Image 1 (cartoon, rainbow, N blue to C red):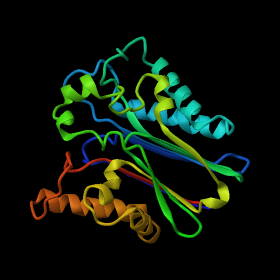
Image 2: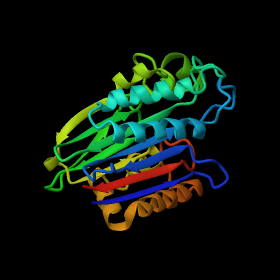
Image 3: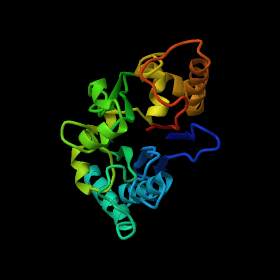
Image 4: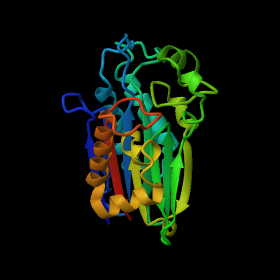
Length: 263
């Protein structure tokens, strides 16, 4: 088994709001991966005394522990318990009903000798490679399907779309959101490789159009997770210089995380 993890902040002087881990149980049977992309808070109040990195560290730590220590617990239930545990840690000091309380996208995968389970919530991606080389992307595309006009301002998004029916969902303070995730189970012998990417790394496909998901996974296998992140940074610098125009991208640089696992 081979695993590789790279996580880099978008700006060197700004905290990395992503979280990533690979958990391998002491039995040596199976494992899990966790990738969170913390949602950058607005300049206005969020109702919380804590930072997004504080939130992703606690939620990610809880998910790592639960996915490894309770291998029979469904991933959606693990996410629900982890959110509840994290919310309890600051419910007495913070307004968890605020629409911009700290929150994150989620990718989970767990494998055993018999199966591979997965969960995706919001706009990070999980790539699954079959033994024949076919690559499938597990995506929660609710945010991508929303009309651009509905995303015109943070106020509109927070009032009408964030963690609401007809909008999109993230892991914030409500454990019930776990039921909104994209989940599934695959036979273990049908999966050769997994790769989890936050949207900062997935820009190589989704924003810059450098290749498809299969080519993205091939790049990570050949050049490593660092190679993908470095290529995204090059494309971002070119775009910032005005040499090319890429539509649909907000921040010049975003936190970028890649977890790669050859099973």
